[in-house]
Length: 443
Image (cartoon, rainbow, N blue to C red; front, side):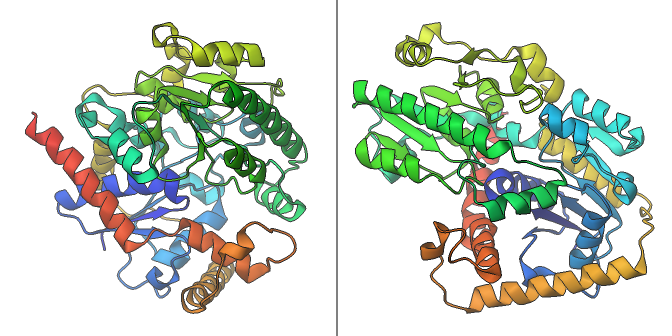
């Protein structure tokens, strides 16, 4: 194996991983895509380790230990950094900054602002590479073409293409969160998040009330609520869906696909609006309550907000010619650098190819912690084995976080949610190859 690409959140990362795999295999390399919990793909005994491992984040020694214990001692680690546009609170906490041995890896930056932040955190400049954001590549004009997405989604979800489609990109991940899950997130973050549930829940409830008023006035056009991948508690949204037939809650497919096919685009806190920006599609940000300055995104805080229902209704019904983007190009460009000639995924593959022919990176790792990481990896293998072989109906557990879920059920649900099947990978790969081949034919 030459290269392993590790993903964590399938909706956020799997398409990017497959795009890189297609290009790397085209160049003659052997590449595999794995999810952190796919125990049968672990290389516990470090047999023929890969030359390069790409990971979605790399914060410190524990991430380095985990990666090597599961996939072998690679010559190089590349941190793809899927979380780069943070809040002021997270930037000050430094949780997302690489520490200790993790600083020795190569860290991909989407733009100059992330590089500046990591240089200030002590990461060597030579380890920081501004390559742009690969998840924006398929938004480039050369890849868009006529993909019939609107017709495909219309057929799959029985949505009338003659109606206007409005999408809300939700990110209420802490709304009505259970105490146990909040504590788990606080443990991972190393800080108190006690203010988050109230901010998320209050904002969501007010926005849902706006939607209810709007749906009373417009029962014809389609309103799509797209939950965040980590948004688990949205019974109130499902209740709204029952009462208003033109409201649909849909998780399927990548967010940029829904942005591309929608006529109106709204968000509260999701940086996915950047994808609308690069698709040259107007979008608006709903803020029924003012967010604390430290909580808000360092990018979104520069946006123009809709803060009252009357403004929302007026915006919803106005003519397309009057629509604008909520954030200026200047602020977007600081976090997302776009090369008009080379797509980001090509630059990523150029970097990987260069690393393969570069001297192995040395990491100073403790034998004790290597053993602990190895034992943890073995425990994940055992849980994964149980997940694959015990025939448990997980649907009945998904809605009840506190009363019915135990340690194993929590793990089984997470594995079920995040691990992409072989057929799903093939479907995505076939679709991407068609897009790439069509672009090649037009040049």
